[in-house]
Picture 1: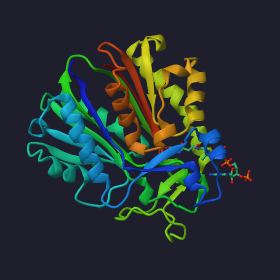
Picture 2: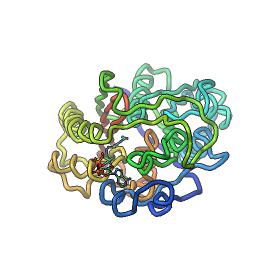
Picture 3: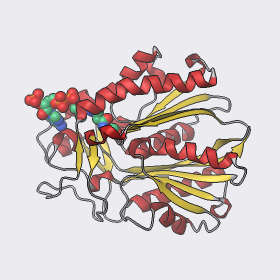
Picture 4: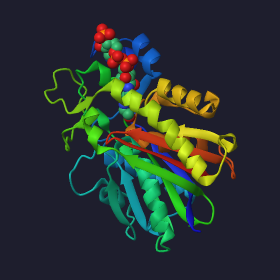
Amino acid sequence: MTTIRIIGTGSALPRKIVTNDDLSKIVDTNDEWISSRTGIRRRCLAEEGETTVELGIQAARRALENAKVTAQEIQMIIVATCSSETNFPSVGCQIQAGLNANNAVAYDISAACSGFLFALNTAQAYARTGNYQKILIVGTETLSKVIDWEDRSSCVLFGDGAGACVVEASPIGMMNYVQHSDGSQGDVLSCYTSTMRTPVISKGMSMKPLHMEGQAVFKFAVKTVPGCISQVLEGAQVSKDRVKYFILHQANQRIIHSVAKRLNVPKESFPMNLDRIGNTSAASIPILLDELNSQGMLEPGDYLVLSGFGAGLTWAATLLEW
Ligand code: UT7
């Protein structure tokens, strides 16, 4: 049966690097607390001009180049984001314009940190119809615009960035996926604004759009992610020992280590970049995938499990052959 294969990856990060020490000048925090509770040491934050759209375009261009595919060959662009600068047009349509991908249909998916996987699953469903052969998937975020920069428990976690991949219809590649949501728990991680143009890192910002109950999200993640990964493996009758890397949403090192322990898989099989990048929501999985790809760490035939979790609440896992 037709599925999709990832044939190219790309990513883009803002130029400005902000360390934990830098944040200690904005809120009452310190490097020791942030790094021991989360594993995060620095993150990149967008400045003027580095928008969700612009970072997405850069990551998409790199993915197209890596895949050796032209923008005109792309038939669909699916963008996962929860930090669009506009209510409309969609980030997808703006990226389409930036790339001049005039043979594509473009749109956005809103599933926060699970968004990239929901987009990948959607791409597979379209490829299966036989109507779409080449699809561009982008996860792009500038959450720094909607963070409450007076809330030390959440502002230290997030970073900005974008990751993208080009997929094509293929007999091998994505083998199985599971995806879930529980809207009844939406309040534990929410954001009640949609459009802010200017990246703001300032004390005294009056809006407090992003709200997170950290411990509730932590418990949700360590409980649901191992089950979701087991489900995707069992559904494909693949043993966890066959999997080279478990590429998880980069929210917190302690969450990732806990998932590794619960699955009884060595933590070395869980690559991480959150120490340098922080939590970039829908962009975190494709950024990490691009790092592994560009470092030559992925070989044809490798099995990978991708898993995301976050606001909605939403969670998902995908098993694929590289
Ligand atoms: O993409 C999904 C998004 N979110 C997540 O994955 C987040 C999941 N949750 C977490 O990662 C953790 O819950 C946090 C890292 C957010 C917080 O860690 P925690 O171990 O759950 O800390 P806590 O909220 O229980 O707070 C412990 C203490 C509190 O002080 P008191 O009440 O014990 O005096 C906080 O006020 O740490 C304090 N605290 C801080 N101290 C220094 C909270 N944030 C900070 C901070 N610096 N940045």
